[in-house]
Length: 143
Image (cartoon, rainbow, N blue to C red; front, side, top):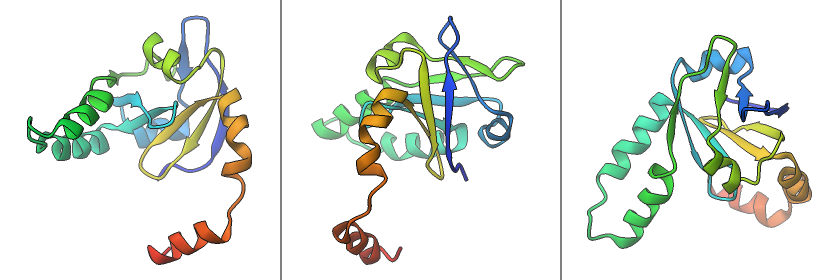
């Protein structure tokens, strides 16, 4: 399970270092792709393969499903970190997530979200507050 929040910096080549404790969980190969709110997701290959199997069943006549596939699968890149645990975040994904240098990684159980530090800070009030409506929704899910 991926947990916690960490701050990192990209190097001059657009590489991010995966901390050693996360490298073991991610494995030697993982996938990065667009998230749904201007962030990037890092998926272990096993999780990505599960997602792919589900998406593979979408018929070509399902326009919304195909649009979703294009968004997610079309943005995906397979990554193999170097011996120092670094991998390049492609420029297209950096542009999408508004990432320049400073990033925040957030463990989300089965994946890791990578946010531009500025974007993360803008959303921190919403992220750091839980209201009664949200508590009720989670309770209805058995959480």
